[in-house]
Amino acid sequence: MIVIMKAEATEDQIEGVISRIREEGLNGHLSQGVERTIIGVVGEVSTKPQIREWMERMPGVEDVVPISKQYKLSSREFQEQATIVDVRGVTIGGNALVVMAGPCAVESEEQILSTAWAVKEAGANILRGGAYKPSTSPYSFRGLGEEGLKLLALAREETGLPIVTEVLTPEDVDTVAGYADILQIGARNMQNSVLLDEAGKSMKPVLLKRGISATIQEWLLAAEYILSKGNRQLILCERGIRTFETYTRNTMDIAAIPIIERDSHLPIIADPSHGTGKWYLVTSLALAAVAAGADGLIVETHPNPDAALKDGPQSLTFDNFQRLMDQVRSVATAVGRTLAVPPPR
Ligand code: PEP
Ligand code: MN
Image 1: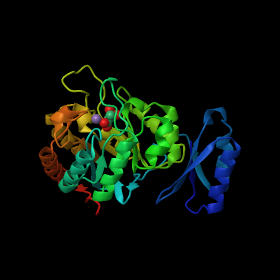
Image 2 (image 1 turned 120 degrees about the vertical axis):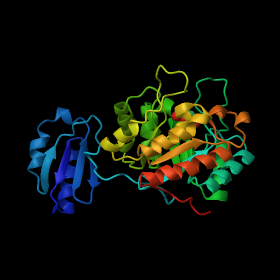
Image 3 (image 1 turned 180 degrees about the horizontal axis):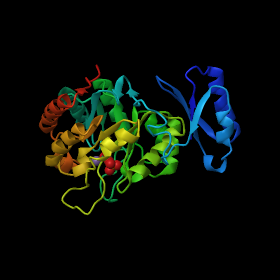
Image 4 (image 1 turned 180 degrees about the vertical axis):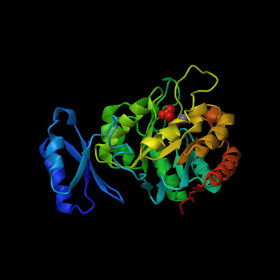
C-alpha cells in the first residue's frame, strides 16, 4: 500500500503518518519525488484492512492506494524516478552507461593489476573480481578469500577503479564490506534471505544477480529484502537463466531488461559472460543488452583466458575487451546514451 501525500504536506505531517504506521507494527518507507512524496507501507498490511481508512483521514494525506504488485519498494508505483546508485562518484542508473570488468576470480597481484589497468584504459569504470567464489563443482577454484580482497583494494588504490566482489555468506558481509565498494550477491544466492538481510543492513551498494532459475517476480522479491532493510543502493543484474538450450551456458533474457525498466526504478545491468558462457558471444549480447536499455555491463576479462583458474572460456582477452568497448560506444550513441568516464586515479 502507498500513501500519497499532498503537495503542500509538511514535514510534521509526513513524520506523523510514518509514526502512526510504526505504531501498527508496520514499516513506512519514504520516497521523496520531484512531484510528490510517497510513503510505502510494508509488513503484514493484509492483516490490518482498517488502516486504509484511518490513513486517508490523516492530515496531509492525498490518497491511499494498494500496490498491485507483490514487490513494493522496488516497484515504479512506489518510486517513479529512477534510482541512481553512487559508487565513489561513479553513478549507475543515469544516462551514462557503466562498465564493470575484470577476471572471474582474483588469482594473483600481477593478474589483477594488469587487468585493472587494461580495462581502465579501454574505458571500464569499475573493477570486478571474485575472492570468495561460488561454484557448481566443489573441485573448481574457490577463490583466494581475504587475500583476494586485499589485492582488489590494492588495484583500486593504483587505478582509482571502485571494486565489486561477491559475498557468499552472511558471516562474510562485514569482512567483504570492509574492502568492497559494491557487494555482489550471486545467482546461486539470490534467494538466501539471511544473506539478503545482512547485505541490506550493511548499507553498501549491492549488485543482485538474477537466480539461475528465478522468475522476474522472485528476483524483485529478493531485491525487496535488501530495500526493506533501508538500503536503497541496489543494482540488478541479468546474467542468463536456465533453459532447455545447451549450446550456451545460460540463456540471456534480454526482455528482462525493458521489463525491469518498466516495472522497477532500480538500475539494471547485464552480464553477457555468464549469460552465454562463450567468449565469442559476449560482445553480441553486450550490444543487445545496451540496445535494450541496460544501464551497464559486467564483463569477464583476463590477461590469458586459456590459463584462467575460473571461467576462461567466457573471458575476453584485453584486445577483445577493447573491441567490445568500441562497439558498445557506437550502440550507446545510437540509443541516446553515453559511456561514463573512468574515475581519475
Ligand atoms: C561471477 O560473477 O563470477 C558469478 C559467479 O556469477 P553468477 O552468480 O551470475 O553465476
Ligand atoms: Mn565467473
